[in-house]
Length: 205
Image 1 (cartoon, helix red, strand yellow):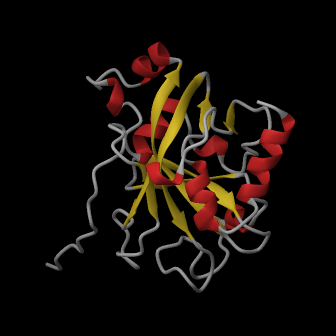
Image 2 (tube, rainbow, N blue to C red; image 1 turned 135 degrees about the vertical axis):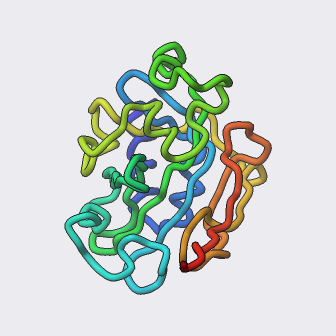
Image 3 (spheres, rainbow, N blue to C red; image 1 turned 60 degrees about the horizontal axis):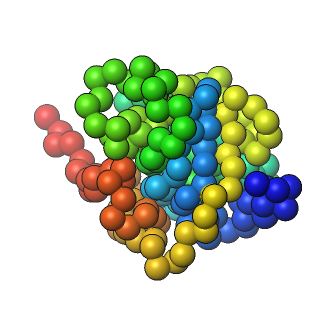
């Protein structure tokens, strides 16, 4: 990797969220000595235009990092038990981000297995956003980190360019609004991609 490669990635992340999401496929994310190749992502726009976005209703203490700068980590806790990590995109103030949904462990496999000892198949280690964070040791401490810097959690360009023909698109997973917006992108046929589950509202008792 060269400085030019990293600069190109920074430029990509500073642009619109959908091209940024597609461009993140194949990139490497390292967390505490384990590296995954990103195989599935979801794009979320900023205030006003995307009811599925955490920033839809404006800035809060929870989502403040989504408002920029691009390339930083937005980490949140969900269902009272799981961490999820997003890469902030767009211009300062836009509040868009890309959820990293799945990846293939390409370095630090033994450590990844030790972090997730109940997992039987290596393809399942980071298959899903919560599993990805557990495999990489990502939690609240990573909130706001510059992923393009040389920290314990860092994002780097793909080793090999992913052709557009290798990318599939479809509805986002488990969101309560904008269910069918086709802003989930994944590497077609990759076994580490998570299963699609459309959100089903809970029946009121």
